[in-house]
Image (cartoon, rainbow over all chains, first blue to last red; front, side):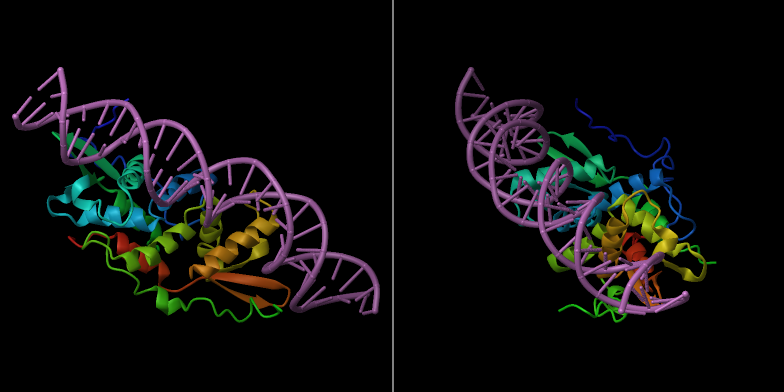
Length: 122
Length: 122
DNA sequence: TTACTGTTTCGACACTTGTCGATGTCCTGC
DNA sequence: GCAGGACATCGACAAGTGTCGAAACAGTAA
């Protein structure tokens, strides 16, 4: 059941994860797209998760182990629970190296979400 | 007890929502900013709300009355409930004109949220 | 006034979520 | 082998959320 992928570099198909949904302002969202999109926003709808995500995203080297970011005011199991949610939402990837597990931001997801929020500018 | 609600909306000022928080990738998010930011994402974390918001945002003239957008598969009170949540989050504004209540996207909020997701590395 | 329509609020319910302590798993070092 | 640290999972609980029908509120027209 171990699903620790993404150990490799984004050399394969980096664009594949990006195309989720059209911009919110371009046309009424389909029911299917709304479910997908809501799941991504939901992953960022908790302050603790947002701080964990931000700590990973802003960490030097683009990655951080749990020990680097777990001081956010909740217990260690809760931190692990939130990191799992971010992983399941496709926002973070994880990789075990020796004793530590390193997290990094999944490629393109931030740009994809920003694209959904960006007006057509036309 | 409660007789003034929709027409005059003393909820959140549209301008105040824009300069909310720095990009997630620039630096670890403060606890205070994470709470503010999570609330905005939370408002868009439900498929029904997302569809309602999209219908308002993509409607001609930039506004829509409830009757234009309420066909999203849930009851009308539920629609009203979700619209209230979007209003309270500062994402939508409402105005009553005669029989109908018109909703429109609050200015700047979309750009602000997109800015939080946009990597500073450019 | 009365009747009718559009929208919001109320009250209740099932379900989900965030949190914790205890426990389990994986790896390193002795 | 054993001990210990890093992280994940389990089980349980309080609190929050989405949903509905019923009712109330706001406005229009007869």
